[in-house]
Image (cartoon, rainbow, N blue to C red; front, side, top):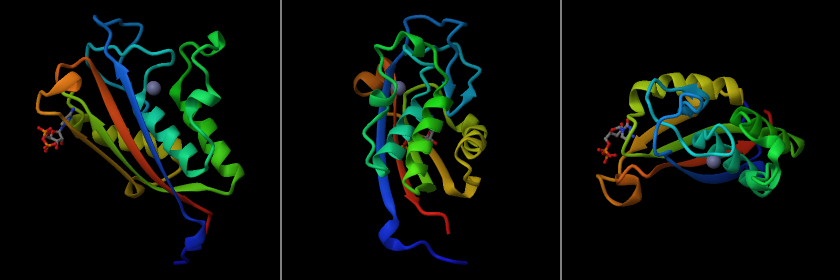
Length: 170
Ligand code: CDP
Ligand code: ZN
């Protein structure tokens, strides 16, 4: 097995938050890591609200020193309303690829009182593998509550942290 040039490794971090809508809108199902969850919850968002993919896209842009997704996809651009977050992630991956960077592994932490992530974690990892070109071995997805404390504990919204290591093809 060849090893990447350590001087070419880059780490990136991303964080995203979305507020829950007051009531479920069937036209806005909960989509996390590209997977539609069978729960009656909706997030408020200009896009499809997939905060896992947003955090990951920001981490990818971070590793590539390319700013953030708000710069690539401004909220003020009406033509982007309802955009699939898979496109946002793909665009971030392309920006990084232009600099010779591909994901090596990624670690995601969802912070939410609800919904329960663990029953869907494997489907999400498979989806993330398809979106990033990584195998599931390079993808970790975990979740925690805040033990009922604060805005996350009151289920006003949910959050996701993403860390990605990127480097050249070896
Ligand atoms: O995170 P910690 O183990 O301290 O406790 P917790 O917040 O009560 O979460 C217990 C477990 O539930 C986590 O380790 C996750 O596996 C899972 N969990 C989940 O699947 N979905 C969430 N929204 C929160 C937690
Ligand atoms: Zn977002």
